[in-house]
Length: 191
Image (tube, rainbow, N blue to C red):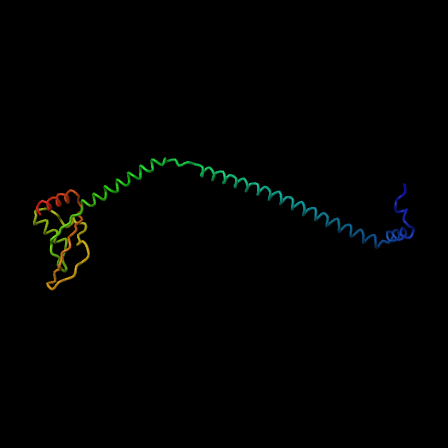
């Protein structure tokens, strides 16, 4: 079997043969082929490196997807989870707290004493006034038993005698309930 190169026209065949026989052309072609081989090897290595990096990225992406799926599953569990404490129990606790708060407010009101009918003077010492009233009606009420003492309401205008035209009641908050209760009962009975 003859090569297809031989079937070409004689002029063309002879120019190829003469080019191949020229050592400069052959060495140049060989250098180009070697450079192409080197570039092909480098390109093959780069493609292999890209494949490895792509495989690594696929693995990382797969891990991230698994984590996201895990978080979504946990979130849906939390959303679907029913409260561990029944609602009726919470309502009962709220009712108990309201009752306790009301009882505390009532006990605080029991510690309040209101004294009216005492003339209000400029610069008065209300603790001293309350102590005098307690001694006058024979009740032991020391200054340390008094938490707070003040006049209730806004201050009315003064008249010419430097006394207020209308006296405000004195409100006393005592520290001890029992002593205060006895004091309040004593004040009421003796008044």
